[in-house]
Image (tube, rainbow, N blue to C red; front, side):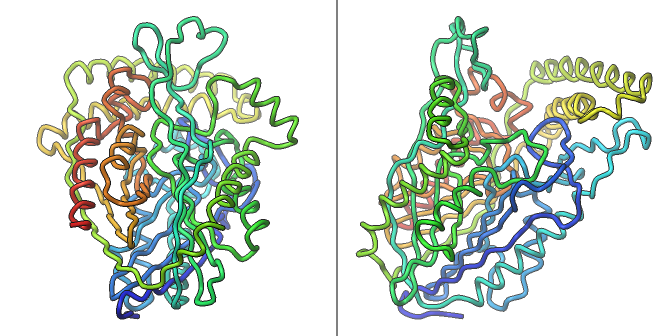
Length: 487
């Protein structure tokens, strides 16, 4: 498939990626969670755009992040002729209620090994889900490629309050994620960072100008109900339902999370008033997010259908950067060892409880305390390992993509990228609209300098293989490539 004269060819596909083999480990918390059911199904959505021999393939998955083995397996399972695997972009919605897809060799803890075979949890190995999901997503990519047909696109922007900053700062300049309540309010000084309520929309149309699908790009992970022991797409499930009810049941919907490493759909203040309004409206928190997103899309679509373009230049640059790792010090290692020792003691105490009282294993979620302690030991151990590694290899390979489509640009990164960097990109980008796509990979935090100064989860060495300096290098390189497209 090679088009001429910048004529756009567009193809869509959607596939169910809910595991067939259950139970599985659910990713997204320190402690293990064994799936206890399916609240709603997980989806992967694919959009192919081709113009004058250039291509971009967007794939969005209802999962917490895209591990290296999963990304690699998807690319290897492609069968359609003509697809360039390097032009495939896979991003996660960051639901905290999807199967674990990070393997032990790539950083996942193994709670089923805690304490030996007598404490082994009966779950399907993550390797099997990676193999299953990779084949499903690859088949959807093949389908979307084969479905490509002439069409057009239009774009627009509006605002929907979805993501809120989740970090607050006390009078001493110490930052905390969540945890603002009646016991801590006296220490409160300010919310740490900015919030971005923009919604960037790319809509696709067939030759008769019928709406076929939309990319919805919002700066918020999908974690409104992040602690469930059931599988769920979180608020994207309700959002798909709302969008299709209003704009067509066959509408394809591809979610993207913009820079939002310090954002969340949860409120950390005004919660009683918010919960009262949810009760008055008869909505859940996820339904409220879905209504806000759908209302916003409804404010955009009527005004952009007169701007549909069918012949746009498409440019796609794929790079692998060597970003500097977070420059760890001996003090960081000393602090990590101290914390690791404390969690090791907690793990041993929890482990001993299970040995002394086997009946505890009959209680619901009996494995939560011991697996939480076990994974924290490994989390702090990562600091020690990275300190040794940085002596010979002080960089991390990072895949990014820059895509120009007419007057708009997409810029990807594999991280939970703090909003300060995202706003830098938007302010300095020459594009009319800049779609930032985070979580197109493993999903570790990259904090802003002010966040790292305040500390707290998400902005401490254990959270950050790449630190603020790496985040700055990534922003500067991304802007350089965007500017080259415009020059």
